[in-house]
Image (cartoon, rainbow, N blue to C red; front, side, top):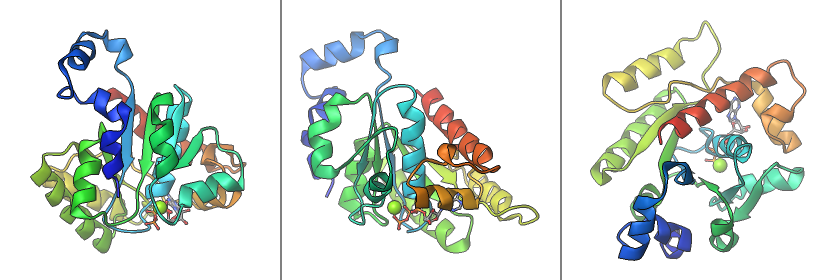
Length: 234
Ligand SMILES: Nc1ncnc2c1ncn2[C@@H]1O[C@H](COP(=O)(O)OP(=O)(O)OP(=O)(O)O)[C@@H](O)[C@H]1O
Ligand SMILES: [Mg+2]
């Protein structure tokens, strides 16, 4: 499904083995020109906030440079979201995404739940950061551990994002964090709380920072912090 990405010029340019000339350009460019990022959001489990995360990371990155969100999910969740109103960045399906990718500085890829082993390999190797959203419930955590196992076998670079964290006094979020940290899984420091304003945003077809709600700021700030963590990782 994601095989085409390998033939995209942007991905070829990024791969230092493609040809010596490109490798030389790549290694000798000043650091400030090496900020182009491909962020993929994937998880084995459905409904854990993949599309919500992809959309808000694209909103964050768009404020820095032109960003393309590629909706790789056949349900076209992100495309539906963008059709409901105007998002601050371009959303494309995979086919359009291949043609458009080289025109954008940053690319965020939303994916369907449970990618096949081949898709997972392609996704993991074709991005700078693989973000794995997981809710702090037993089923989502089990699926995340399974995915992490597959990614470790591929030696892929990834980070887990806790999402849909229930409000205090529920401790599921903290417990999930401790569990993941104890087994050495790389985690975003920031987690995403379960807030109904995210559903309002989805209904309105806008990012959460465009919703008039007292919780919108808190919700948006958490994705800003995740965006910063991603940028700081380079
Ligand atoms: N932090 C949150 N707080 C409250 N609701 C959320 C949050 N994140 C996502 N949601 C809601 O949970 C539902 C699932 O989110 P989303 O579509 O982003 O998940 P997904 O992993 O992309 O699902 P799928 O596997 O179906 O593609 C949506 O209704 C969304 O609005
Ligand atoms: Mg989705």
